[in-house]
Length: 85
Figure 1 (cartoon, rainbow, N blue to C red):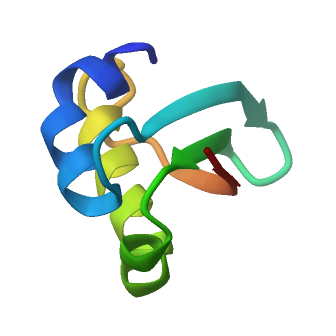
Figure 2: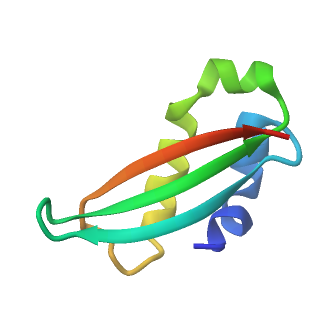
Figure 3: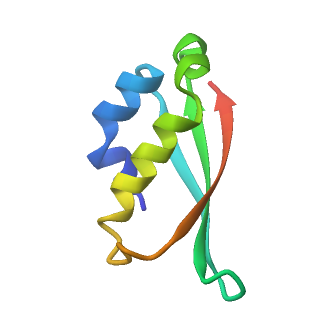
C-alpha cells in the first residue's frame, strides 16, 4: 500500500500540510467478521489542519486507495493512529 503516499500525495498534503504521509503498519483479514483490518499511522506536520479534518480525511484516502488493491468491494475497518512530526 505504498501507493497511498504516491497516488494521494497531493490530497494528504492538502488535508494535513506539506510533508505529511501515511504508514501502513499491517493489513490482516478477520475470519470472524469477514473484513480486512488496516492498521495505519498518519504522520502530520500541521496540527491546525489535523484538528479540523482528523479521521474524515484519512478515511477518504484509504477508501480511495482500497480501489487499487484488487480487493475493491471487500469490507475493511480502519484502525488509525496519528503522529506529530
